[in-house]
Each structure stands twice: as structure tokens, then as C-alpha cells.
Length: 406
Image (cartoon, rainbow, N blue to C red):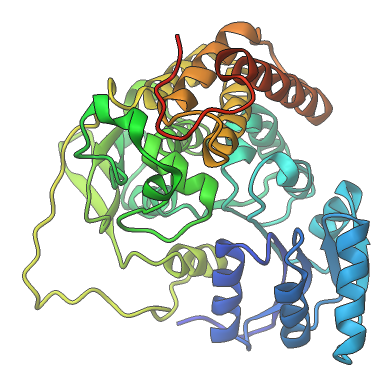
């Protein structure tokens, strides 16, 4: 059972996204345990206004001055008490490091939330990590800060959250391998030569999870699983060779840990992000399930198969980038984000995502990053190079489904 000694206030970075709204669902379930100190969101001010009306945060941060003005107008029109409003990176950092914030949920997509998360870790905050880019781009910086401050960094991604649970079964030195599962995405059974013709709508039709657009496309290319390999190496101090990916279409087993004696511990739960979110928020306690439990009275079949590295080359690039060290993983992330945007806009074909990332990794030299400022500069450089590659290879626009030019 969850204790109710006092209310823990949350700073929620990314309140209007899928992780953010699921986090607020968990807060609703445990009003005696959790409250909201700060909400940070982008430009979905209508949903944000409803969240403000319900949860009454002290601080709210939005993307820019335009969103700030729109939000203020909605709050006034609906007679909703106006909290302290702010915008910009500095405001995100202040919200994440405020003394009142007992838990920080890092759920902003992209590098926009990296600095605030890094500073929260540096200030010894307890952080629920749902933002892949924090460790993919800034793993060395963040983990160094964690070691120095002693901050708790609890993964929220279902796979890493599952691994976190499995690793509680034994000592770290007893572990031989970490296994992350992947659904395989919508093109698991699609022939490689047919991928050039797939459309954004097809790629966004994920068979298991409901997620944001970028992460859904990354799941279709298996780039998302590559990012998770990188995260796992940083989170759990594994070398890349000891992190394995296995395709599991049913998405019921989220992670497995193999121990030295050959025993394998698996973490299994419903396919609902409220499960790992609540685990992170209540750890080390376990609360009552926030969603319906698995029904073991029903017959079921679970399948496992190796990933196809030739059909999905981005997964292999992720292994190569984390093995190379330095800033290669930050370039990998930045180039992928630009390429995914271009694919969704119909400017490049589906295989063009991997082609763009590969060429960007070749053009942007890897180096060691010593500060968040250096990381953000490297991120900007990698995005600029990725855009140049797309412009040179595909011009202003190509219809979706047209094969990539070589």
C-alpha cells in the first residue's frame, strides 16, 4: 500500500502530451499522495487551461509569448485563477528545481526539456524520466551529475521501467544480459523493398501503443528501440554488447534480465503507460494497479523473434553510435528528428529517414561534450547538416512513396 504521510508536489514537464496526461491520471487516483506544483507545456493552451482549472498549479510554463497570451485570455474568459505564468528555458529550469517540487516528471519531447532535467538531477531532485533525448543526447553529462548529486533517476519508458523492476531480483554483478522487447512496429511483416512506398498514415498506425507522432515513426523504423538501447547503457551501466533487442509483437513482456546462472526474470504488465508512471512516482512502494490487470484465465500466445537489422538499419546505427562514444548519439537523435519531420511532411520517403541519419553521422565529427551549452550547439549543427542532406538528396519536396535517390 502507498503511505499518505504527506502530499508530494510534482513539476510536470510536458503536461499536455501523452505521458503528461497519463501522469495527471495517476495524480487523480492518489489525491492524498500527489499534487501539482508546476505544469509546463507547449502550445496546446486549451488543454493546459483545463489542467490548470483542475489541478491549480502554482507555476505554469509555456512555449512562447504567443502561447502565453492565448492562455492568459482563456483563463480570464473562464474565470480560472491565474497562476504564475512564464515562458522560456530559464522558466523550465526554475520550475524543475524549485524547492517545492518533490518529484519532476521529464516528459517534454526532444532536447527542449534536457537542460531542465539536467539541472533537476544536479539539484538532487527525484526525476521520472520519460524523455528519451535526455540520455540519448546527454547521457554522459546527466549520469555524471547524478553520481555527484545522488539524485534518483527512475525510468518511465515501459522497457526501462521493466528492466528497473527485474534488476531488483538480484545484484548487478550477477547480471549477464539485459533484453529489451520491441513490438516490431507496423512493418514487421512488410518486405524491405516495399518500404519506399509506405505513407505517413501507414507508419503512424502502430499496432500496440498510442503515442506521439515522432515516437510512433521511430517505432516503425526501430529507431525508438535503438534509443532505448542507448538509454539502457547509461541508466544501468551496461556495455552495448550486453543489451539485446527481441521483437515481441504482443507487447506484454516489457523487459527481461538474464542472470549468470541462466535464470531470466521478465517484467509483464498491461500495455498502459500509467503502470510505469505510477511505479516511478511511488517507488520503492507498489500501489494498487491503476489499470485493469492482465486476465490469466484467457488463453494467450506470446511470440519472440530477432529484429531484422537489414530492414531496419537505424537500430544498428544506434549500437554503433553508443559504442563510438562522444557526441555520436546526440547527432543520431538530432538527425532522426529532422528526418522524421521531413517524412511526415511528405518530403522524403520512409527509407530516407535512415539514409539521412547515416549521412549526417558521417558528416558531423563526434567529440566529447563537457556542458549542456556544447551539447545544444552540437544539436543545432547536426540539425542544420540533416536539413542540408535532405535538400541535396530530395530537393524541396518529393511525393510520399517515391523511392530515395542515391
